[in-house]
Amino acid sequence: MKYSAFGRTGVQVSRLCLGCMNFGDDTNEPNSITMIHAAMDAGINFLDTANVYSRGASEEVTGKALADGNRRERVFLATKFYNKMADDDPNAWGGHRFHIIREVENSLRRLRTDHIDLYQMHRPQPTIPIDETLRALDDLIRSGKVRYIGTSTFGAWQIVESLWASKEYGLNRFVCEQMPYNLLDRRVERELLPMCRTYGVATIPWAPLAGGLLSGKYGTKERPADARYALRSAPFARDNEVALQKVEQFTQYCNERGVAPAQFATAWVLAQEGVTAPIIGPRTMEQLTDYLATESLTITAEDRQQMDTLFPPGTNVSEYYRADFGPNARWV
Image 1: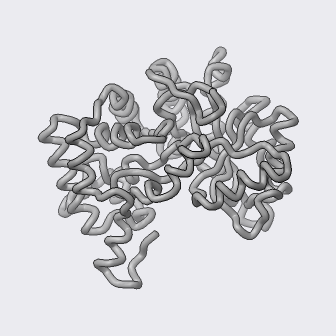
Image 2: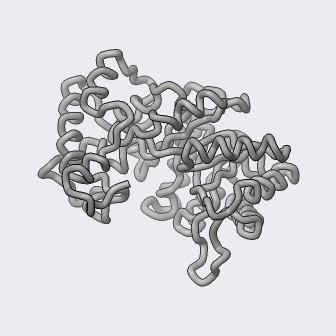
């Protein structure tokens, strides 16, 4: 496993980040723990979860896995706050101090640790001044409960605003951004990735397989009965006909090259300039094994050219969805 600097912090993290969203939910506890241990044994030292994943179950399983031996000391452990944690409490979500302080204590308890290496705001909240959020997070860093802070799915301007606020008020700054990035959705190439490179912000792309669409399982006429998009509604309007047509062409290219589509799609994200560590989200040990083989896969100049032709830089499949199906189509 190779490692790289986590933005300007200097912390060395594995080039693949193990996403723990499925653990404790789609993947049961014993299998989840086995997979976390296998990932660590393969060299992964970067784990990402969130309080909202199965309302805490993912954090609990992750905490149990890391409590075995000295494993906690060997990982850069990340979790998140922001999303609703109770249906009957108006303050059980958000970027305000009241929620942040309460939720960090809950996450520390579930993760069985005395500190969180990376505490991330899961979504932006423009209705709350960013300095309100930063002051609470700064206090957590100064108290030793959190080491670094980051964002998830923020716009470039929102991160720059936060950097200004940190400088203006003498507060710890966000050191990373976790964004959606894959061949079907390349919007972050327009502004976000260049901004992160300019300001030394680490990047942790999520959904490198576009929720599984780039795994090779899907076609315009095929949807496996046990696959994600057959079991539940598609998030982010990814599974439209235009996307599926492109996925079929992508899968054909991978087959001709002799590479598994899931591995190629992940390796492509990993190879993009400014990317620190894509988040992999396996449900099974087989999927984890496939992901681990990604690091040794080389993306060639021809690969880049072919992908740019099939999925033009800076574009988003959902924009095609809107163009093809009218202004009332579901898109992001």
